[in-house]
Image (tube, rainbow, N blue to C red; front, side, top):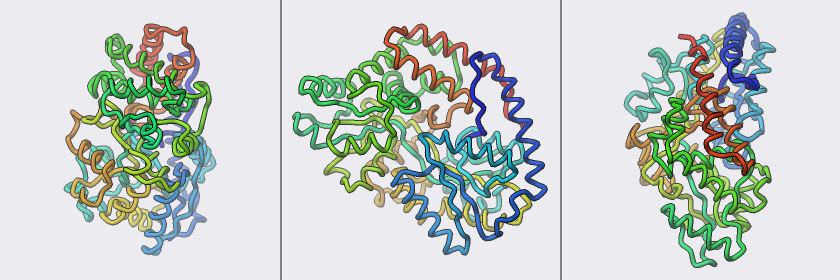
Amino acid sequence: MELPHFALPACPDHLPERRRVLLGALAALAALRSRGAGAAVPPDTLQVLHWWTSQGERAAAAALASRLAQEHVTWRDAAVPGGAGQGALKVLKGRFLAGDAPEATQIIGPAIAEWAGMGLLLELDDVAEAEGWDRALFPVVRELVRHRGHVVAAPLGIHRCNSLLVNRAVLARLGLAAPMSWPAFDQCLARCAAAGVPALVQSAEPWQVATLFEALLLASAGPALHRAIFSAHDEAALRDPRFALALSRLRACRRATASPGRELPWVDAVRELSEGRAAMMVTGDWGKAELAQRGARAGADFDCLPFPGTADWHLYSIDTLVMIAGDFSHAPAQRRLAALCASPAMQEAWNRAKGSASVRRDADPARMDAAERASWTTFGRGPAALAPSMVHRMATDEAGRDAIIAELHRFDGDATLAPEALAQRLGAIFRALARTPAAPE
């Protein structure tokens, strides 16, 4: 989750003004919060706002809540449904405006620093020191949860967003193996089309379209170009031929999808895959957890693999919880929750239920399933192998993310739009983002 969201105006030039208004409003709310708003919640109870609402996500949250209860702290659930956390963002903003912020909330990626820079987050340095996070956490995770030298978030799991879910029975009927390279994937698309079988179940929801494109860009160009476009907002990178190649592959995938314009919740897409109504789905490894919740068996009924051509790279999103700073009456309970998140036992339980990989580099790979082990191993190779997911809030702020996703969605739905036109529109967004003030220090 990121900063409470104001919709991007039609003209990208307004981005800086909107950002300043937002930061000023939240700074004022921080002062309101410090005067005791929300004090009716007992000190040993924590309201936790999040968007973990699928079966696998609920199982992970339930495991965390159950273990927290053993610490004599009550988890008051504030789950907000909606794909990619959009609904949760609106609810969080509304609660801050009402002076009723939760004690803990799911905030991820660059937004952690933005919230911390406004003094809204409880510092967790004592927890990190007591739990040995400096030694235990992967360096990328360790830096993500820090702001200006202070730990301000608790890490939970690493998702691999460049994942391919495969229905083994459907491919077996066509005499195909799970594709590991782009030529093999392309062959799967052609063979499925010849047999009248949808190769892909892919929703036309904007965030799902953009998730597919991120995987295609990684396969077409590797992590360096992905970072140049979605993290550095480099206009020159948009003119790289591999960007256009990824866009052409996006349209090839759309042609291989049943009902191309259908906006399908991701959990329903996973259900259709499990029922054999398509051969494959490109998504994050959270889909693996949802398949398991439906009784499907990894390695028997389905495979969760790196997207073809990306086995050496990791398009990542990292789940984190932050503790909202208030009058400090909840601080002891908040610190217990933070310590629990990255503990070895909780890491194993959380990531098994949610489909993600451990944030701890001292985790035991023998206790992981094949997909988690591959994700964890690849992430451990360090920055050169990593690309922070734009869609899943690791690469840019909320306004930039929404604007980029909207343009990718527009391209996906308009066959007359040329890649050059998309590059020009994204370039305008990048210029507007460059004029946006940095997060407060």
